[in-house]
Image (cartoon, rainbow, N blue to C red; front, side, top):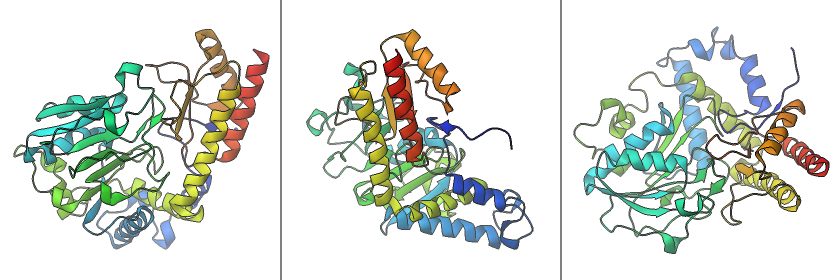
Length: 361
């Protein structure tokens, strides 16, 4: 079989649980006696419809999605949602509020400006996105059709630890990088969306949870495939959905259930992150620029302050069986993405490696 599996700290696409990969592998040529792979099935077949329905039901149950909300399995990544949200929602008043706390919320903010008047309700750019603004740092436009934020910032390693209060204005939230890692009160949101390639499934699937009453008010030039109403009416099957990714999501949800569901996963992931932050904070060499209270449990960023030492760390980490610890090109340093599928053991070994590097340098 070649080499040992590495500890993959990639920000996305990221590692999947080994049990899920093994189960998918065992079923890859003949899914449950159907005589074919899920990759080969018609999305209109009874056997795939069951996979689809079961996955949707499991997702609703794990996320406690209330009545009045639809779960959609779409394509185009979170980036397509940057356009889809304003196209479908901004028509109400022509205005929206955006909080910019990192790279992806900034791209979403720029995209939304094409469709209406956008108020920058909050920004952490003044401190290079090393903190999450508090409620009193948010300036709301009373006429906003919706309020937009990104729950976890993969590049800068920050995460919102509260849900902003918007005085009844629907909240649109990009949860791509921390969905399924902590309990969420879905009823506080108008739309939650997430690219699957970090905590849910392979790249190619985008999950959207939408309050049904928000659909059907799209701008007149909204493309057919970017209309939430189209997708709700056809239960995500106006065209061929990302079948294989939906199937894998179902397996990941089974795995998550076996770990105690989302509350169980929250305890595990918080423990992993805390262990890593403690090692970084107590080292002589490494620092984490993110303010305590804003630190992400999913993406831990750290650096030595010396580019050559950082490069040495990354090089030696690869030799030690870790991959993708190099920070994003826009910020440098190092980044460990420790999504749900990263076993605690992987983080423990990384901590040992950091301690040894600290001592030797």
